[in-house]
Image 1 (tube, rainbow, N blue to C red):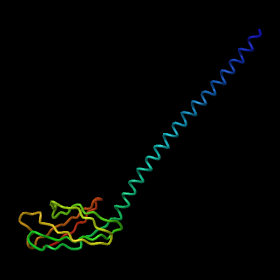
Image 2: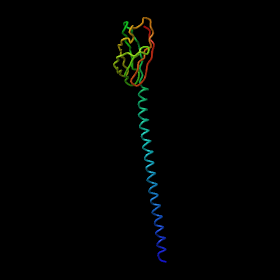
Image 3: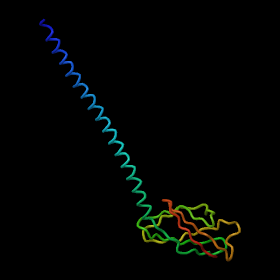
Image 4: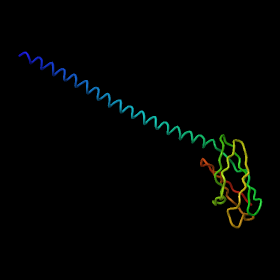
Length: 150
């Protein structure tokens, strides 16, 4: 039977082709999985890097309220100094939890001081001998609280 040998060769060739195809499929799937993993890793590194950069700036932002002058029954001057390593943008000031409104943002450069004139948020004005908790809020979310007496 001369054709029996030919059939065996054909089966062997089919097995080799099948093995080669399976190796190709497994390699392709492996490459796809590795690429997906690497892309997720890169995305997480970028988001962590952005978060870290913002946190570094927030940590370097430091400001103090040096003085509060109650110069009349309805007006006050708040002296704020930037003692940190980055410029500070003041977005709000409040007295005893009541925001000063309207309030224009003030940016303070490094090692600079500004005096911010504010009107009393209370209809009756400042109470003589009254104690007020002054809160100054920055754009990055830092808050400086201090207590002052009229």
